[in-house]
Image 1 (spheres, rainbow, N blue to C red):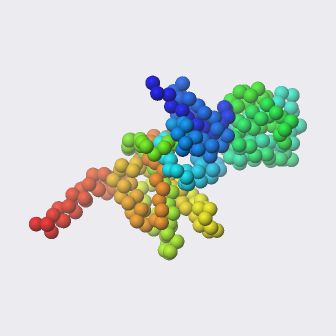
Image 2 (cartoon, protein in one colour):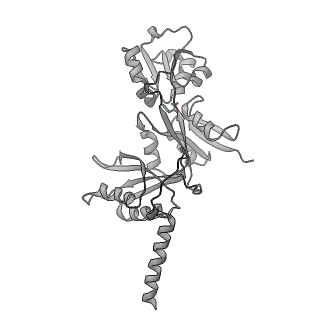
Image 3 (spheres, rainbow, N blue to C red):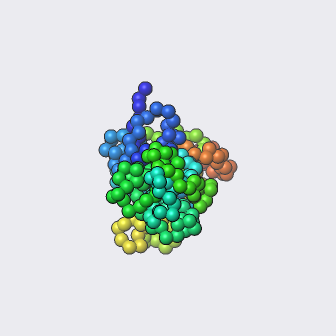
Length: 313
Ligand SMILES: O=C(O)C(=O)Cc1ccccc1
């Protein structure tokens, strides 16, 4: 059996590793921990791994810019799957540390955004120290505490256990139902087949010479009954005020209505980057308006072909 190699935002004990284990349980793949999202995607682009797992969006803090930007530029990559992971945070420290001794806390910026309320209430004077991931905050605390500017880490319970740290408080997230969405990314040499419950991700660059440009982009989805599930603007980094739109919507590139929308967007946009069609993690049914089903599109095409054939006769 081929053993896939997966790069992920490490080290061991990150939420991203939990997502990878949810995607590929048991020993189905070799896991390659990376220090950053960029490093994981670089290993994928260079062919050293077959896929990468990275966080893309969470229910409290929104999109993960590092991932959105890394996918929008560089050699093309595609999303082939997604996983939703419920997030529970602990605050932990080296054995013997008391909560009242903590004057600085290390963690990933998305984790900090989700425990800020708890920190303001419990340790209002504690300073935040950003780290590359939640588990790297825990690992560094366990391995070389004197070089760090913090005495406690916010991470997953498994990371505290993995690095022998003592949990000072459990379940410190401000929102109990927090969920993070992770994507499985591949080189664009294959594509998952349509399941009828799929999502597609694109990055759109609007033409700057047209008034109502954003409306024109959104219309392409609306008139074909395509439901958008995420829309974010990101700076293109070219110049001040220049933005692109990172969009997820329901449907697969093989669906007629999605194909028609993508063809129109290709005409209307200055540029369009296709980032993959993949099964939606929710597995929820997608409602398709009877006038935008595959059959409705194919019937319309047959009708047009009959009209054109009259002209040939
Ligand atoms: O740092 C981690 O553990 C990650 O996987 C990134 C992250 C951080 C906070 C919430 C969800 C994912």
